[in-house]
Length: 282
Image 1: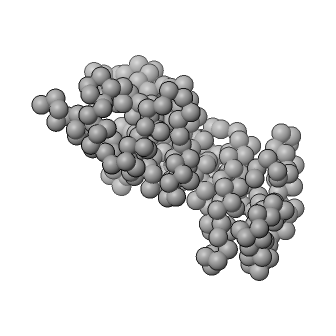
Image 2: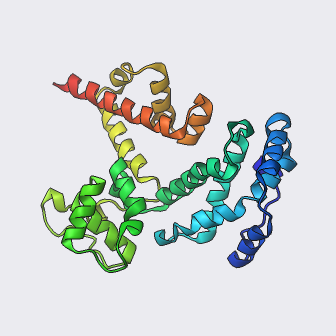
């Protein structure tokens, strides 16, 4: 779909692009449904284009919410547009919901994945709680001042992470100088950037790949044998290919489930593999 559609160019002035995106009229529910039916039933690319163009302004609005991550706004919008196109392709007009409500998940998912690929702090995104911290710190903070210890502890408790992680994330967002070397030998203090600077790959993927290498050295085949066919396919596609590894969205489309469901199956499979590996070494 994407190659056949003519969208406003993001290569020039960002303001010009935003003006162009805002110039496309918002569709009424009846207009939207008719266009979506033309796409759903007949593969009408002109209808797809009208649906996409009428929702570009919403992508801009969503992308503006991610200004604090130090990435070009044009890139965030471009990634959001990819999510919008995916949403339009999958939108079922008979579900009784507006396209904008359906598309929000896809737009944010693409922007999130782009941010995580380009972020430099590996340990920020190794757990669900840390991802929540990553994407919610700025909105949860009361003003721009540095948080006091009570506020740090309260946020850490609410999000289920360590206080040190909240402090480190706040320093990163504020642009404060952070020592590259750890300030002590205490394991709880090992949150200095030297420990988790990366080459731009998704942080959670780097950690998981290291664990997969460890599994390879200690009987990977045995741990794979404990998985069902679907879980094994996901692990092999995500982690064991030499090249062309699959994304969550690739596997979601292949298996007919959501990307979040693929992530859940993957996490459960890795946990099961680790358990098998630990049992084999006892």
